[in-house]
Length: 307
Image (cartoon, rainbow, N blue to C red; front, side, top):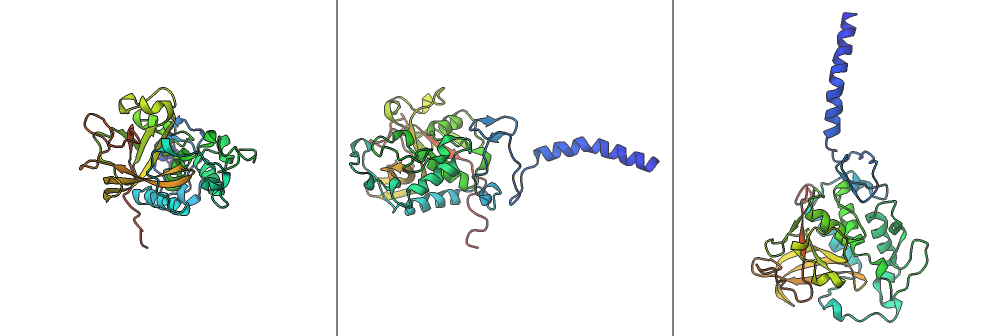
């Protein structure tokens, strides 16, 4: 009896400690993640992350490889090659509107489905956008190929890459770039840090962002975070320290929905690799870069790369 009582007391005393330890234990690589009560795009204070659902590949949610810089660059470059490796360095204000749907890569056979995968995987399962494609709305109707700004998928592309690379609940997946720009600027994402383009040299796998539309001339680093959403565009840095056409010193970024494709763009820098002068003036006449989002990866590269 005394032995049984001692065992019961031991179990009773250790149970709270076990619960505490289990609650703070980090998931192991290859382990199935526990389901989160939140499947929305808002920060979940209780779980310390953004919700995600069953649309995500198992290798990503279980982190077969750690969330790393090499994979993010590799995934972005893979998608660029899938779209034919287009390079787009012209001024977006001078791009002509397409006259026929067939010239838009996002509507081409094999590619409109890929854009649909950006939406399906990149967004949370309860969002209407998960059913969109490169040319269909959520009901399967063809969208107007000229006036399709409401279906812009550049943020879905960013979300897709981060999701497939294994960021899991730590990235604020959204159809709007301003969601994760503001999350980085306000410290609401554990893996994003907003950096001033005048003071920070980007690294491969970082994001560089610019406001668009009427916000292009008003949103700067000093404006962040904003209390409202705004149109923007972000691209993944895929190469740094370059010296070539068209700008001489430059970096390369890859982004989605640039001329309706995943495209590579060159961005001018100074000798330190920065995008703006000390007084905040962007070296890029096309884009007044507002912020760089430093991504805090779990590893620089795959531990098993090449195996």
